Length: 125
Length: 109
Image (cartoon, rainbow over the protein chains, first blue to last red):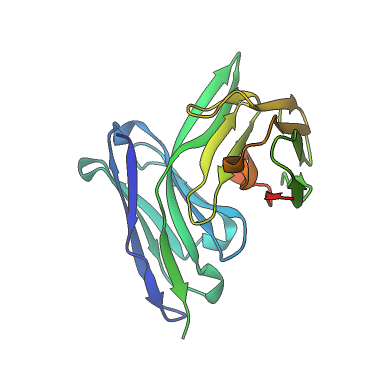
């Protein structure tokens, strides 16, 4: 069964750090781009970051640049999100997601086809 | 930057009805659009990709259409399990980022 399972969430003070992990199983992890997506309480979905199969390319939402670092360990089938200088507005459920794409003629359409259940991060004093 | 706008924010409907949810892009995005369903306390679930291809596990009463800047998610004969929040999503190649709409909540009338 294809699965993603996040861990590492918790309560942290403003300015603190946290490292989230996502364990993948049931598919060839090293073949996929992977993303982190978050959802603040009562709010919509916000993409945070993604990483290429070999880790050579990483992209971030502006609010995460310079504070968050996405990484992966293909030998361990694991995705990570190191979050530093945390702010109250980072409070959210963080999901890891597998990226997939479909192609039609020369067009490529990207989406997230597998999601974990999420881990909750609360930034509060 | 491309902005995705969904309407309405909330839709109150009765089981058995047909509903249409709209997602508009601030500029043309071809068919580079996906829809997700999210139920309370659960992770989002891929519903439609490439604007009109239904994901595995969803019945034929769900359909997606549109291209360019306007996209429609249609649900025929609403079932109780369809009441959820629906998000549209676009992937921009440059700068590379995923953008979600703000969501449409489908609630029981």
